[in-house]
Image (cartoon, rainbow over all chains, first blue to last red):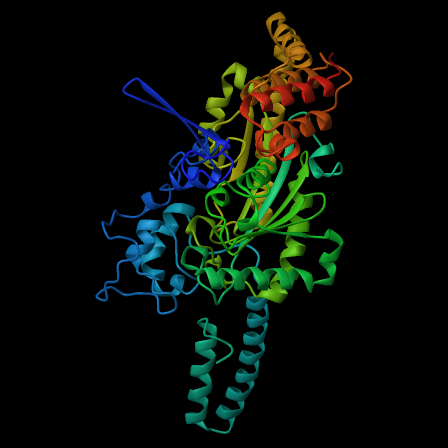
Length: 173
Length: 343
């Protein structure tokens, strides 16, 4: 049997609708059924309203997810605002975590009861940490030598660099 | 369908634990998360991940099969969902998404679902620690090529903050007919939340338990290491396994329970039409019967395979995508009768 909407493809979705006790039946193809928003019982079961589970951790905003409002701060990499994040419960890119770190922290704490990662460290971060460690050691030697030679201005530069690296500065800089 | 698929095997504590699963969520650092991906960039993400897999010599042994999900029919996608290879989300949204799966379907990579990459390892029976070791080693190989998004204090960066940190979801599929019958299951579910765990239906988030099957998984991913989370889940699930076994021992002497087991076996080995919900509740009783030795000559592996084989989309895939509901019920009844040695 052909689809009763497009009349082109084979109908393989049987739709029964009961409105005010009047029953109507239709045979549709998969595409038309999807366009008309028909979902099967199995899919309905999967979509039973868990989507907003995370959104509920945030205060409710009425802003539409992608409205462009330049008065709010946005992630420079993907353009997501914090309102976008709170309405969808999702971030736009890895950089959003840097952009909205302070705003996100209380919610992250509420979800996980914690804000500090305690698990596996990614390879690049491991390499970076090793790199930082050896740079700090190198700078400490230079600092010691500068102090011994009474080159205090130079020593101050090394001290600041060490502090920056220890505070989690980027070792590639 | 491959006869050597992971679920056709039997593992530790298979009488209660149907399967173990580890899933790791990972993202590329320089591309927007899937929610913000354009069609073109989504394709770039697919190509980068596929190329990383292909160029990693250590991964060739898995013989990953590539599937462009947008090119698959809805029935094919539903059958992947039934085999836990894709999530319910990918039934609605398939554009720019892909699946790589090993021949036995135990290792798979979902591309552009909620995160750019979701690595999954599954095994029959109880065994989270072993599969975590495997998932961890594959993750390292992929990380070397793809350099996943990571932050020193927040861990692996994921689209949804609920997965931040380890990005790991470890879960066990448990068959708990006795705890369900005694009503103890309701208290168990309440207490699990306090322990940072969650219990759901068979297909994960938002699904109701069918056939007394429950998915137990860790909820918290930040502030706890992978190993500690896996151990915590294993320890608590072993307590549940023992509680279930104790409850089974108490119930097995009850005549009404024995009647229910044999009656279910009788129905399954003689029916001519069988709906999927009816099948799940009857097969749960049969599985229970095998566990308490009321029914012999049947293995948990046989029953697991059967449960996968007679799901709606899997039947349509085998017998034609246009197989309607009644026809599916007839085919399901035939397959089940044959498997149980009925007439």
